[in-house]
Length: 77
Image (cartoon, rainbow, N blue to C red; front, side):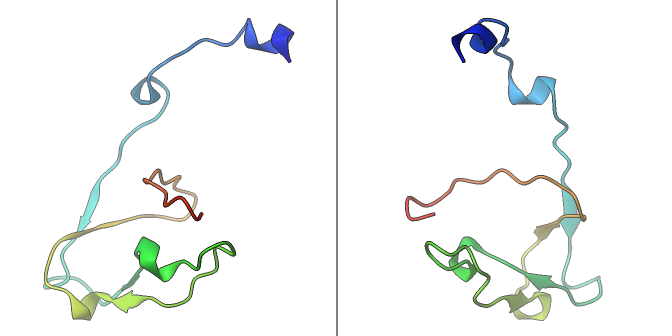
């Protein structure tokens, strides 16, 4: 492992990935489901519930299949 590490280069995430922010306005768009970290079960990481976009008035971000999400994880995950 030490031999591999000496070839690694430290870079900022923005140098190798794009940040894409697709806004979702629940007042103007078709109903969608959305998740918060609270909807993910501790330890198992199963989705326990979700909300409907009709239940909120604030702007949200929407993601596409195969998007990679980075988030502040809770210690129990």
